[in-house]
Image (tube, rainbow, N blue to C red; front, side, top):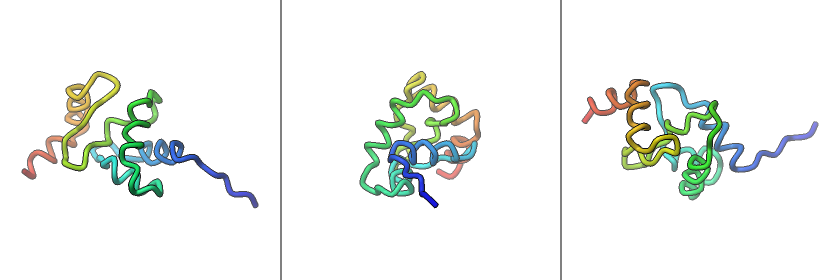
Length: 95
């Protein structure tokens, strides 16, 4: 039986694909889950260059809770999508 080896980028994309609607993960959490806990910036770079429709990169946010950049319309568009999915309302109500 052979084991398929995935690149770090493939692992990151798979992890982000599985973030449910209304939930988020930080860049650091994605990096840790992909097996490289110090690679949060690499996760950001992968998300910046991701245009796959089945990878909801808007669900990856900064560790400080800010939404960060978004390659499909900027930070404001990312905020709008997260609000539509119900994340920001739930998150902001806890503050």
